Amino acid sequence: MSKQLSNETLIEIKHIKKYFPIKKGLLSRVVGQVKAVDDISLEIKKGETFGLVGESGCGKSTLGRVILRLQSATDGEVIYNGQNIHALGSSKLRDLRQDLQIIFQDPFGSLNPRFLVSDIIGEPLKVHTNMTPAQIDARVVELMELVGLDASRRNRYPHEFSGGQRQRVGIARSIALSPKFIVADEAVSALDVSVQSQVLNLLARLQKELGLTFLFIAHGLNVVRHISDRVGVMYLGKMAEVGPTEELYNKPLHPYTAALLSSIPRPNPALKRERIILKGDVPSPANPPSGCRFHPRCPMAQDRCKAEEPLLAEVLPGRQVACHFPLVEDGALARLAAKTLG
Image (cartoon, rainbow, N blue to C red; front, side, top):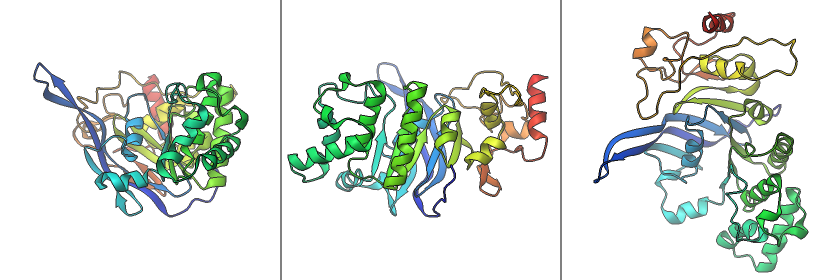
């Protein structure tokens, strides 16, 4: 994405943790915790699209839901407009919902099959505004046209629409209250590739026209590259690397990021990429490794990595990485690839 980013921070995440208790026995005793999100801090700038990537189960969606307080945080703060979202009472949180919205992953399960599309899109307006039924209907027509849907079909049910059209209904619902920030949680992963590009272009257009800020969560690395201004890479509940999209894709600094990018197929066989093959499975978030969580699978791991957890720190201008031995030097990526293949 080539656009001028604002220096104004819209959302600030401070040391967010989200642990889920593991219970056993008749008395449901807590015997452990799943550390889905474990001490993540980052800033999302006004007007940007921040892409969040990582393997399934790394905590991406959980982080997105915690940011919106759809799930409570175990610890930490999410600051919006100078307020900690997780410290607000129910009344103030209700008012804040107008500014913070979400687009869900599944366009089939996220729409109530018993509601007409007009009711689905108009529901936020009924809850948060004093608009009359006629005003709500006019706004629904406006929203459907804005997302590329035929407004004459607003009195039909979700099952009468295709998957891509259903996702457009979800997008229309998410922008009904003119929000400032939207979490797009795997918003295109359930769609056909041809439909994905249409929805991505729609989101980019809406961002430009409405001044939206996105947290775009996905596991498709090419999709994230297409739409994001900056990218964060998560691994096992931790942030591994953060940086501007093109810089991160052209020169990854964390071995895990490099391995993810090396798995992307290239349509032109003449363009070679260093292949990095990781061994072993992702550890359990209920029992994460000591030190760096990636060290059991990292070809570059040393004794320090096993004992000392690396902190996310800036190693190049605008580039943050949580690694004791980041791939900063020329040739570091080739040496990493050689180790995995050797």
